[in-house]
Image (tube, rainbow, N blue to C red; front, side):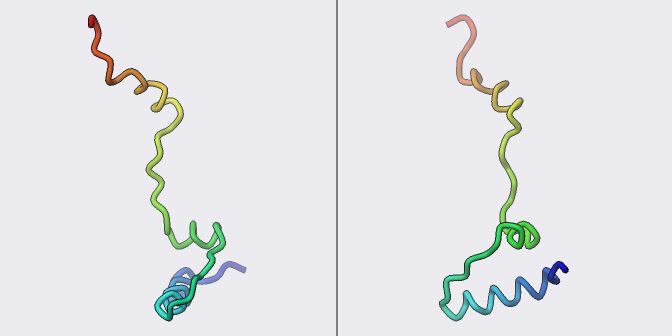
Length: 57
């Protein structure tokens, strides 16, 4: 059964504030929105690979 995200955040914040190193399960980190996904899609990365090349030079 999934844990309440607010309770999970509160527990981890309390442990971290006490100076503990808190390992977090990747699924829990995702649940807490701990990481912003700002990566390019593979298609966008391929399309932008020559953006710094000026045509005709």
